[in-house]
View 1 (tube, rainbow, N blue to C red):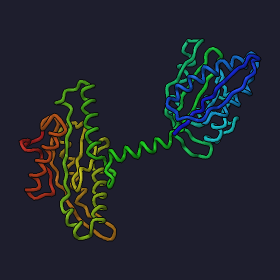
View 2 (cartoon, rainbow, N blue to C red; view 1 turned 180 degrees about the vertical axis):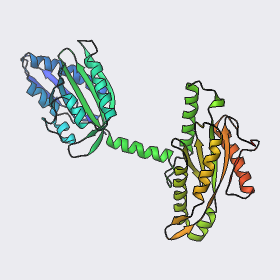
View 3 (cartoon, one colour; view 1 turned 60 degrees about the horizontal axis):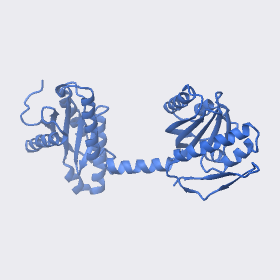
View 4 (cartoon, one colour; view 1 turned 90 degrees about the vertical axis):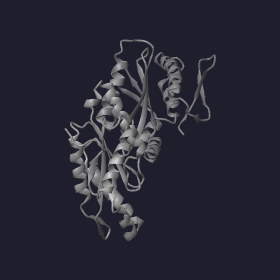
Length: 361
């Protein structure tokens, strides 16, 4: 849980400053807290600029008490005027490592895409044409390279105080949250044994494909795709002869060969047991699906080295085409399954189109 310190600033009638820090509370809306801090800081900075009962040193002491990294920069030169203790502790950089915001972005942002987006966000505020008021930068997720080589996933937010020519940036470490999100994503969308996409990811990929076709106003007759349903021939024999641990290794090996046999962008999924589904997208012509089937079957037919055991399996495939054999994923999978059933009955180790499709133009 990320915590944000709510700092109370109080001025008595003699214009002297004192402050008290409340107990840290769970951060519900960091941007809201930054807005509140910005309004308070504008008053404090104005006092500091006018040398009235307050100094920049007092402001730095206050910012040092905050438990999240904060940097303060002046405009329009973008010179970094201050980084707080949390900034130095979490990132490992000293006050003098980066003199400007641009140097910070160039030196610490890991990816060029992050650097470009960060510069664009700041420039839009710095050169917006408004000379007064507070400008806000929406949360931006970036990868920060720390001084010791660690990489943290950071959510950066910002405020520009145009009236006094100052910018505040906060950096929330969300690395643990991203790791947890990735773990949940993998549980939800990947097969735990092979690491292949599961049925849910297949459905997501199909929805994205259909949405892309609709958005491009492309005729479905020219948006060819295919569903392959594949079943391993001889898998039960491996389990019976060598045991389920070796059987699992066979499934992993078959999964890798399937991935190596399709094109970049095609989706190979494990449906369960020894059954797989392959989504072939954006086919130039239906005959491409047949060529991929031949390549897959040839690859799977090669012997598998499973620990100290050499085993041979085959693959049977049923193929349905979009839009000829169905307009939705469920119908296409049923059609491909019918074609697979006919292959199994006719001797296995081959592939077939869905019944009724006798030739490919």
